[in-house]
Image 1 (tube, helix red, strand yellow):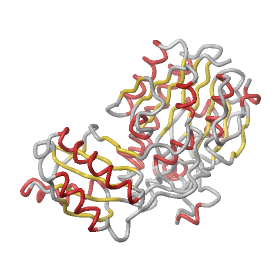
Image 2 (cartoon, one colour):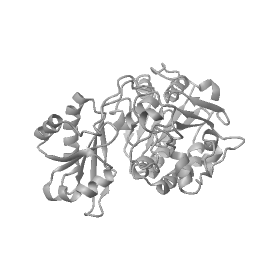
Image 3 (cartoon, one colour):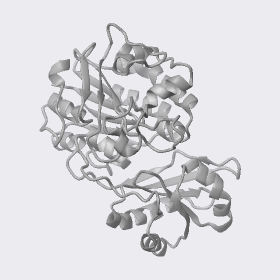
Image 4 (spheres, helix red, strand yellow):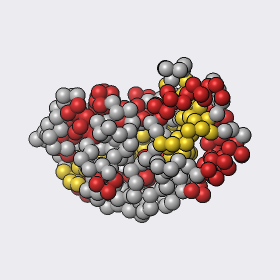
Length: 389
């Protein structure tokens, strides 16, 4: 029986094109591989020892090792879509059969925008697909002058509202997003995202006070199952937002990956039993969406540097999982997510050196954790607990 399970989602850390990548326009995408090539090779000694090069052949700077310290494999996504919500839900055992609506080409319907404006008392401008950093540079000055809120989307199912903190206080921005969430339900939009920023024209910067207002999962997740059966649960980063708080006894928002890793280590020091789910957002938000492979490599190095402390904190009946929710190739000329395999690395029990292969769904993580705690199985996924125990 498990005492603790920790799932660390390295947001956007894809490991090569998925079998159905071409259906998403992502043929040839490879977040890890192309990042490595762009920087002349990755320097990830702890991930290398764990087996990252074993699950991703020919990863420049991270060759395969003869005796990996962790179990290793790759996970394909079974859900429709390639966004954070569906990826996290699938890791937690829920597959999304129908992708949420996107408005990349058309912008949001006038009726939806008007309804949110009327109820909130704010006016929007923009309403097109764009990079979040680019759009605040392009439209931020007008926002400062008029007070109108910046509305934009992406290839994901997201209704994003950007506002300068000096123009719209955080709680007011969150209030507008809650109103938008109600109206977006009718259009099956996956997330409404508050995007606060600060600074002056030419030097605007987004803050970590972002909040996601998501649709609730349409089936019980491993967090729900654990909570309902008395296993303590703790969410780190945007986990609380992506699961609408469901299945979580406690949660903490973070200000970047270093903060998220430190909260994870504190949770391991404080919790004798439980399920900890962590989102490390910087790879996606700070580097992937900004097409910055050098920063992406630095973000991976930060996580790599914490592996020894994380594995040292494990007890004999604990498991630590590293995975991702989708890809975001920072070299492909697009700021959008990519449909890729994601890494699977598992530490604890007798996981070292076990080749878990290429698996058909992220939900295998949830199935393994539920079996480990002696809980009912989630609606999807096949446990690999016997392989690592």
